[in-house]
Amino acid sequence: MLIYKILRAEEWAALQSRGETAGAPIDISDGYVHFSTDEQARETASKHFAGVEGLVLVAFDSDALGDALKWEPSRGGALFPHLYAPLRYAQAVWSKPLPLGPDGHEFPEGFA
Image (cartoon, rainbow, N blue to C red; front, side):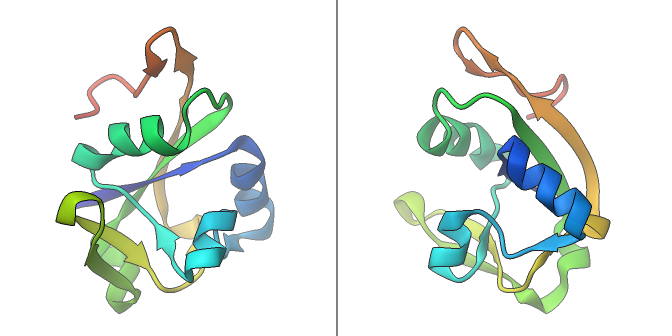
């Protein structure tokens, strides 16, 4: 199953150049890397990234992240994937721009 991380342009560039990261400031503060499922990603974008340009949507295979990935309750009791390990560039399945349109972020064609 694919899960998704939304990164700001500078966070994406840092991940590409360093090969791994502890995540965004909120991830570092919380002690884990926040992910979303395909059903959760749009709400995550609107809630935490409203009006932010230059975002990148990065897909990861949840199985490949191993035991460091935990499914924990968050918004409204829904289970969200949280990674208790560094986020590694080599584990990314794909990345796509997440441009800001007139009605919010525009997810890639075919995205749930």
